[in-house]
Amino acid sequence: MVAPPQVNFRLFEFQNEPNSGQGAQLWYHDHTEDFTGRNVYMGLAGFYVLEDELDARYQLEGKLPTGLAGDSTRAPTAWHDIPLVIQDRRFDANGQLNYDAVFDQSGVFGDTILVNGVVQPFFQVDRGQYRFRILNGSNVRVYLLTLSNPQARNTRLTFTQIGTDGGLLPKPVVRDSIELAPAERVEVVVDFSGVASMQSVILENHGDEQADGGRTAQIMRFDVVDRPAPPRITIPDPLRTVRDYFNPSGTGRDFLDLRVGLSSRPKPVTRAFEFDRGGGEFSINGQHFAGPCQLHGEPERFDAIVVEGTDEIWEVSNSSGGWYHPVHIHDNEWQVLDRNGQPPAPWEVGWKETFFLRQDTVRVLAHFETERDPKFPEFRGTYVFHCHVMEHEDHMMMSQFSVVEHQGDRPPPTPTDNCPPSTGTGG
Image 1: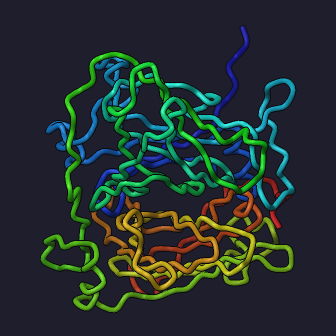
Image 2: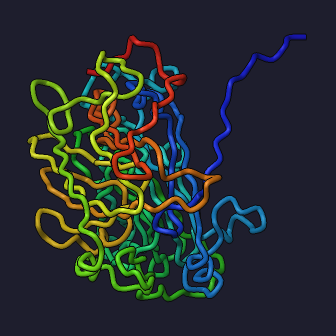
């Protein structure tokens, strides 16, 4: 008899609620300093759905599609709420994942599309309405999603976007195409009623980040079959009143009024972070990541100390030509105030924590909640923000901030027992 190996693990307990107080499509992945890209590429990532009372009520009232995929209480044909994790990968001659970007700062593009871990799958649908919760889980590839019907090319197929990173939007938005950067999520409703039975709809990618001979142009296929569809739904409009932290009475106002509501609270702290590349290296405000592991010989550094209970406006920008950066901020959900000085697009009005920058400047606003339950100190602590092109992050395009209880408090020491060997590849 062979004794099982010793396994070291940690049990984390936390309140599963974004600061926005609403449901969301969330994901998690390995975050080992300098090795995130490789570890996620090899499969250390997951996607989960957090629902709230409003979303559940809409489903009970027949206002949003029901039947989350995997629900054992329903037959698979009744699943009309489908998570889709899109990734691109390369495989070697033996069918094994081939990650060759350990020293490549630009990141690795795959030549094969996977959805939920399956190569370019198909999914049978009836002629009803389906809710798809889509995550771009790729390391670097940006997707431009469209729908097509090869058997009826004149048929217009659209997405009705109802949610983003942080849950439901204030209003549904009809879109012909959706650009999705790494780590971004969207929730859409697709109506197959205009597609004849025995025809197929293709979820396509028209992104042009890398020419690959069209191998990543088709993501997956929906085969329309002849079976009963659930009763039709009418998506609520509006969908949600975004919680207004800047109204002491707690009553909701439309998101666009938030900028006016700022006047009723202390002035937010404003910070600016430039995501740049110069001298062959990635940086934020000209500096590299200096975390607790000190893999690159620099002492640990915090680029923001945030006091709980306060409001912050962060300006994130990218002026480096030829490089794009999806900026991801841990710990909180944010609201876009403006992009390049203009009001946010309808699909950016709501809660987000990943902001795609080509050559853009985006201002975002968040409230850092006061501690609510001492058993779950999930707000105070150390968090990172970084480019979510994972190889950019691994090459030190990352920074960290700390949320503290009082003005003048210093961050506590960050644990280092999970640090990798000092022979990291970043930089």
